[in-house]
Length: 154
Image (tube, rainbow, N blue to C red; front, side):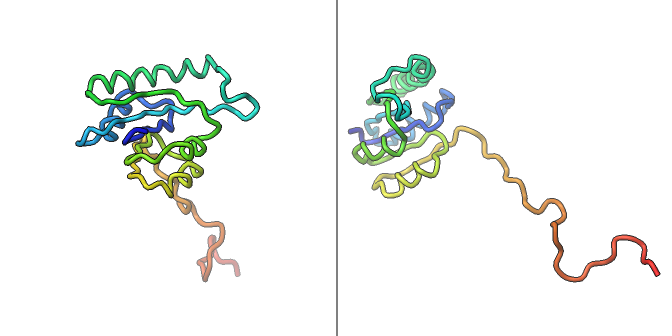
């Protein structure tokens, strides 16, 4: 197993982010890096099923990773890994020294990685969206005394 693992969570990651993830995984020590691009296959299909349309969409990402490894002088490999789920893929691997996630992991993947004895680094692929404030408008109910809304009737 590689000393460092890059796991692509977002298949729409740009090539410069792939290169950054590989450089982060290799670190200053020049760890050997294995990059896995998961191909999640539904349970209704056999795990060895070939899905040429989906695999064709993931090949440019793998090729960008191979080019980035070659350009940066990083030893390792990049492959498309068929699996049932990302958490199942993580559980099947030996624990590397460093795991770099390219994209935002979902709750199941974060739970699977919680007990991993590796250093965990996440590289987001999309800019963070500001969360909507819940009380931007008037609240539906006001507690306490309030002033009347209109003119006072007598």
